Amino acid sequence: MLQKLIIFSGIAGITVFIGGVLAHLFNHHVKESPVKYEITHTMMSFGAGIILSALALVLIPKSMEELSLLPMALSFLIGAGLFLVLDQYLAKKGGQTATLLAMLMDFIPESIALGAVFAIEPKMATLLAVFIGLQNLPEAFNSYRDIVQSGFSSKKTLIIFFFLSFSGIVGALIGHFVLSDYPDLTALLMGFASGGILYLLIQDIIPQSKLEHKYLPSLGACLGFLVGIIGEKLI
Image (cartoon, rainbow, N blue to C red):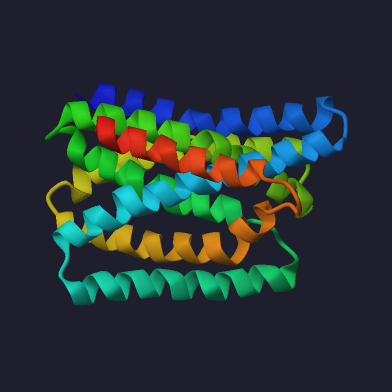
């Protein structure tokens, strides 16, 4: 059972590194052109759609199932408020890490949830691992671009992504051994993550994905959300 949990959470996490590698190849081996620019923004919108689907279909519903109104609202507001402060700090520093933060705010709570439900509903956990992996790919693709633009080298960024890939295993193990008996604590974590993700989406990610007189990025967001709907329906 433990071996399967590590394998599934590892597969879900390795797509962070794969997304970074694909972004590296795309940036260095595809010539600059309006088409490349539109593809980049479409991928950003696609990732935003998947993040939004995780927020609407997984994190908030699971949090609302376990919590009463007040703790749910407080955890959500604390998440939004903390990331407002963090976003202001990063803006002063000149960083562009909103997509990376949104990915981690999504990836880590879902990995913890994966570990918590694995012993109870293995089938659901397996599909959840696939869903998480699909989310991480476009999110990592977009995060690579943000981090490189904020001053990191390609090599250093890929190293960061490689080690981040294993955070899903750590989160799943924590969920399995620590939080499986405390659903309220897991729900608080999901509510907190929801507030932070929604703030980052509205403040940073969605505005950056828009292109004047281009409509493909908006369709990309719809397709990303559809991926989330399909994943939730399968689970």
